[in-house]
Image (cartoon, rainbow, N blue to C red; front, side):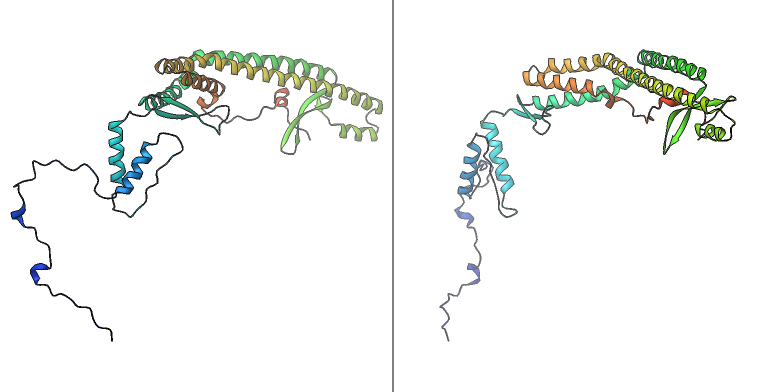
Length: 316
């Protein structure tokens, strides 16, 4: 059996350390200064200080350790000291790159100016979200818009009315034909004042109640009118496209001054070439996307053949 090591027996008064107050040469600690330095962890402190002293980009400090060991407190104290001793760093702003959305642009501003620029941009958007819809509700905007729409509709109706007259003179009528879930315009012969499909006329020919020569003549006329109808529909669509362009131009003409004025104020507040360039791109983008400030309304697809003969029901 292994012999137990020799032990020293201690009396109870030596089991705990006790401060000898007679050895303290002062009555109170009020006259002493608080220690500002972090006690212990000298190697870790030197490593952190070295990292903080490196100004080049691409360097980082990684701090690890058990919870409650003062990691956060240590870093905060060192950063506060660094802030007191050094200059306040510039603000780094990453803004949207309109040409390459995946590559934000960096803008460097004096300390505090970054937050000011952010606040100015937020105020800009809030102002536009209020002022542009108000303009769109104004008589100034709506009257001109109505003029553009009404002028286009009148031009369309005049073309359609003339075509319907030509169709009627040739003994045809324009009706709407159901094709699946869609409808399309179709020319139908008129017999005794009623639209009569060619299938019906074929039956009448077989029953010797309608002339075969007359039927063939009507088919030739049908081909000519069908080609003419395609030309008319193309004209109608061209008028619609021209109307949309005029409406967009009117939007830009009426709304752009609001955007321009607001952007100009921010440029004057931040006299910086990169800020100015960025705001130019913001302005251009806003003008191109004016519709985002409009109330979204559901619009059905235009069907020009409905205009041709809106009261005529399909006979097929």
